[in-house]
Image (tube, rainbow, N blue to C red):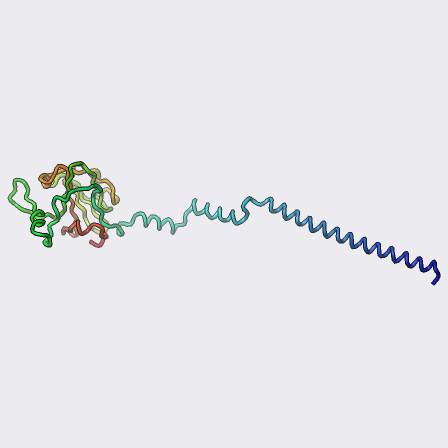
Length: 237
C-alpha cells in the first residue's frame, strides 16, 4: 500500500475511535445525570412528607378516631360494667363503725342472742321477733342505699319513725327505718351507695341509742337476714 494511503487509513481509524469514545463518555455522563437527578427527586419527596411518616400518621389517626368516637361495642360495654343492677351484691347501708345492738331473729342463734333479738316496745306487753338488724352509734351517720332501685314508699311511722322502702329490679325490698332525716322522694331512682338519709331514733330503737338505724330486707314480704345477705348477689336472695 502506498505510504500516503496508509496514513489516511490510520487517521480515519483514530477519528472513529475518538468519536466512539466521545459517545461512550456522553452516555456515561447522561446516565450519571439521570441517576443523581432521581436521587435528588426521591430526597425532595421525603422532605415533603409530614414528620413521622405514614406509619406515624396512621397511628395518630387511629388514636384520634378512637378518642373522638369510641366504637358502639366499647361504649355499651362501659355502660354495662358501670351499672348493671342484676350484678349488684348487697352492701351494708353504712360505712362507719357501728354497734349491732339488735340482731335478726334466727332460730340458730344462741339462747342469749335470741333473747336479744326479741323486741318489747315501751308500754306494750307484746314481744316481737326482730325482722331486721338495729345499729347504733354515739354520733350521727349517713345511711346509704344498699343496692340500686326505686323508692316505692316513704313515711313517718308511729313506731318505726321515718322509713324508706327501696325496691330492687329483682323484686327484693330494703327497708331503712328510725331515720332522723330522709333525703329521697317517692318514685325516685337511686343508685347503690347513694346517701338516702341520716341516722335517728324511734320508738322501736329508743332503748338502744340516740343515733340508730333499723334495716330490713324482704322478698315476697318474707324477711331475710341482712347478716347473711351482705356480699351476696341481690337477685339471688
